[in-house]
Image (cartoon, rainbow, N blue to C red; front, side):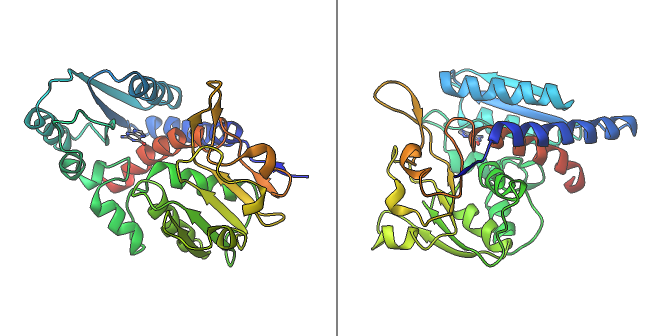
Length: 280
Ligand code: GUN
């Protein structure tokens, strides 16, 4: 029988802990403020941004909202970021991605001060993580670590296999598992004998972006399976990179989609915002 790793419950736990912490800080006169920038009105981005603002409200973090038109120039966006970088009242800056094609995302990410990079996307943040120095950690992989730890699953000494090598999930995920003393293998589209490698895993983190690709045949009996993927299937139903119905027959613990990794990303963004007071 598998254990269901419930991201809704764990993310609520984290948000409630943060809420208490923020109330304590407020009593000492410390206020936290996140600036959220959206360029254009991509409907999915609007939902994400709305949820981030709601989470700020719940926890007691102030939020500044910048909804810029699609035709905003790169110069205008960079100028706003520079202004927020030097605003002492702003602790964190988040630019919702994707950006319109005429804006260079890498340039935007690099312009955000690493001291306010609550998304953890700046090369300085990524570099700090890889050499074990303090800095902001990308929210989704940080959320995966919390899901594993708060489910009472130990990482130290375990065979951890990460499926996917993206800059936002796969690479930081492998660094975090390594920091937790896991033995880490990163797989990708060119990996040979993928199934055999996955079947070695005590902890399998799947972030390959292929709907329901990973079934029971990739999973060792009793393994922990974390599904980072999110897709809509042919019936418009949400599904992950893991075929849940098949995988749950062999996994020891597994995350559902939705309600697994998804809710953790915003909780960890909030955690980074609170953490920012120690970095500023
Ligand atoms: N777009 C999709 N996910 C994210 C995220 O975590 N951060 C930002 N800034 N944009 C995103």
